Length: 214
Image 1 (tube, helix red, strand yellow):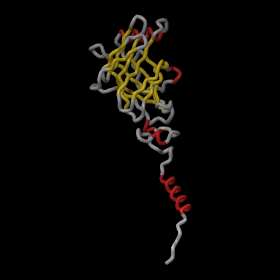
Image 2 (image 1 turned 90 degrees about the vertical axis):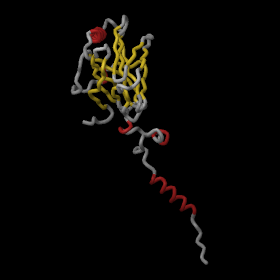
Image 3 (image 1 turned 45 degrees about the vertical axis):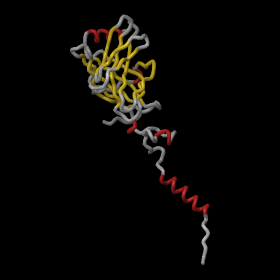
Image 4 (image 1 turned 90 degrees about the horizontal axis):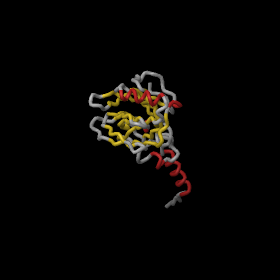
């Protein structure tokens, strides 16, 4: 009888090499709740994991949006709210994150008029930075809020006149993922309703950190 001794060092090396070759690369690893950064801390999310903001649905719950001066607006699903106070102009939109990643809102720009989505991409330098980050989980509802507080500026007067005159408004919202990447601008149109509220609709998305889909 012939006994063949196993070379366990060689077998171990081959098994390790085979395991490595069958594991996905960190660059191609999907960013899901069970994989993503827990398994690959240095990986960046793919475009498939990017946030995407749209108006919330009509059957989504009302949201109470509070401001720093203890004022608040109540926003219906698929809608917006706007109010002109003695010291500030307040605007808020009910949103839903239709993407697969957390949306972190960074800034905004309001136009006191209706702007179609076909216009050129707005420059980032024109945006007003939010005083705090607003987070909207994937598949969940949240809101955007903005204020004008300096009555001496043309922007305050224009926004106040448009809201009191029940004119359409346009708001560009700048946001990205929770790592600061995949920055996107979504343009929302706000149309006045007969009951005093506003209807929110998304008209265009622009990508900053990746190519646009069109």
